[in-house]
Length: 166
Image (cartoon, rainbow, N blue to C red; front, side):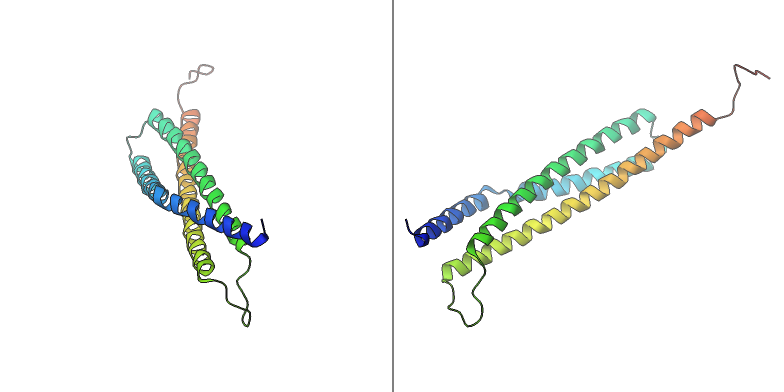
């Protein structure tokens, strides 16, 4: 096979996998996850503001936030892998022709534009997951601060001493 045939085969395979990926609706679940994460973060903030939040509920909230962090991180890794694949496909196309050089075929130009558009969408999702990570970490720090403050208050609370009952 000549280099030109290999390139054409690669482009056809890339186009086919891109179409399959677009049809599979992968972006929808990620968008839904972002909404779900935001809702869970908002609910956590409301729980923290509740004066009746017990230590046990605070511990459960902390565990849930850690699970949420793990979920966000794993999803971010998935999105970054997808961005890497798209970046590789764009690199395989090479640089677009410079001014004065012959134009590339319409199919290649269309494929390049499609890949670049998908890559920008995916990079936007990476930034959104970064925002969710930052918000979740902030809420987790707030939970930790509340737990530490409560512990300090219990330890340093004045009361009767077993050593000096007077």
